Length: 157
Image (cartoon, rainbow, N blue to C red; front, side):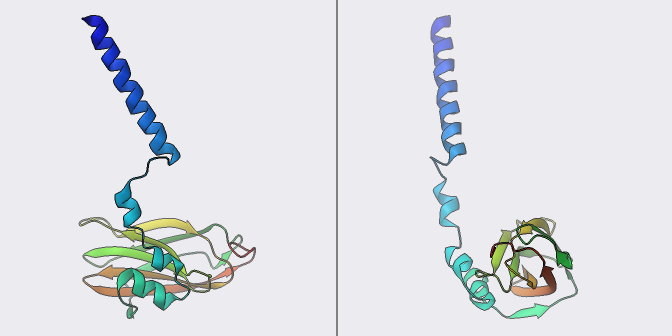
């Protein structure tokens, strides 16, 4: 009797371990996550096209309630630190765009209800450009931007 319990436990542990390795290496991928990827938005070549594809509109309202923190001069365009905060109620998403990149959409984050509207990430920039932060709240798009000078090539070389 004890032998059967031990064998069942070992088989279950082996199966869970194999599944964990398969997921970790990308052999098994969750279909729901892949289906939600906004492929057209990330392939867009203009800021307006990226916003329309991702958020349904490109009508932005400048807002002092959106704060963008990025360096004035990025010594390496491959890793430009950017953070965005918003003091607006009901934020649904925060999007970051680098205007002169071949594909301007750098990152987009969907936030759940009650989540603090703050993100921090690193983006790639091919050359000196405006970095634009777009916050979607209450069906409206609020934005702010900042010019970032790139001294060493990022995604452009």
